[in-house]
Image (cartoon, rainbow over all chains, first blue to last red; front, side):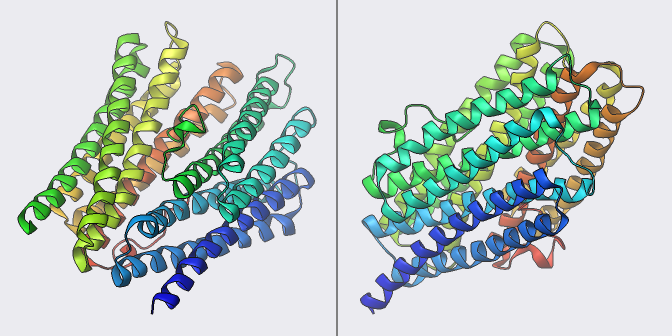
Length: 224
Length: 224
């Protein structure tokens, strides 16, 4: 029975890792759809997002089942409790990336992102793909150094987000209010996607070391 | 020892209830600060939000402690797991309301909200205060009917949110892009505040009945 139990713990960890990689795929497809005004790609991103939702239900159910049947203690209890929290972040990342894809679908065949904002959105998309990949690597390795690096990547996202808002607020902006509203929300989705990835890193540190992330990541970003 | 344990479970439930009432106070103070461009009120809201953050840490620590020491089963396990999830939603509500207060502080002594958007923001603030109060009532009573009513209140918030965006997108809008960006984000904060309150209701239903909320609330709002 203990062997089965440890296998189950391992499977739960693998499921979370797979969710994080899927989050990365959703935000990659959503950004492509946004920049190419590609309806099929936006729908593919939305479908991928739904898969994460199903994986989330599975992860939550499995974690509660392990708590109920195995009454884990110490490190294993930490692992299961953290899994419940992580799956919430990972689900949220998919939902935010899905919002990006939905914006592309809503405006199709028009482009959501006007010319001057395209480079920043492309960079935000690339940064989001990068941070989701790093979060997955942190989950797979439990390495606190990788997890802490997420915070630097998040700084990049924050800087890009500020640049995006500056683009919209530039006196030369000539794309109207509707586009400004779209771009403002898109910026917010990317920023929150990255914040949740940082949360994944923080929880991974807690899982690996039993310490809160404050030793590794100086500022608290989770409540942003 | 069992008596102590049940007291601890009760205290944890009371802490979550107090957090939810505090969330209500934060969004009330933040909305007042926003509509009156009141710097002191915005800082009071931000301070209240910090208190919720501290209560969140306490709730999370206590839930993990109970899992570790008591290895609860059945309904009590459900209660502790749900507490871990609820405290995440309740912390997020405070963070979102704090963003509203921070917008008021950032623009002080100017008003963030121009005349035509004031009634909708006032209504959104009132709806957010209402939904947080109902979430607290659902937590205190465990009554699935109250919890399900949160969903109707959320529909009101969604309609107000649409009206707010329509105000910004009206061809007669003459308050510029900066204000449009501010209002867009404020609308998003109120909407997400309400979504998290609905999540609190859904989890309360699960706690009270052991059923997922689907029987009571037809559509899934949690991933929005």
